[in-house]
Image (cartoon, rainbow, N blue to C red; front, side, top):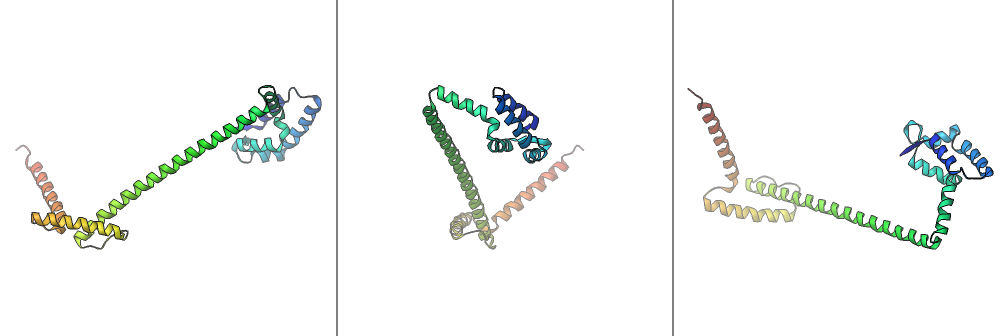
Length: 202
């Protein structure tokens, strides 16, 4: 959100339309010096392109020039006084402040839980991949993965034993089973290609 300097000045004069002449005269001096001077314009528009005032700078402007929005805050105060009273509105402010804090905490807790679940899922997937690589390395007699810890190695040993027992029952070497499967798949692929080539019309 950004606004032109001229638009902000027009808003200020609209707010001060019902002010007395003394307040209007004083406000005119403030506007010329603190908003419309070359130095002031550079200050208020330095963080946004196109010579406009950003929302952040507008908030700073209203804090440094409290008389700028005085009529609006004065109206708000009077409205609170004549409708239900200041104590009631103060209690409501505290209530809404607590509600905002509770909503923020609930949102932050949800974000934290979501992050933890993603981390756990990532860790689980990573552990499964490391375990699979460790089993393959053990079967092939190759060096173990550097990220395989003691627990992973123990699990891998147990799996290798199961694979070797099944392979022994089938009369095959567990270490070469994967290679044989790959070779069988390659031969099948080559046979399929030969069939495709020879099946043309003569």
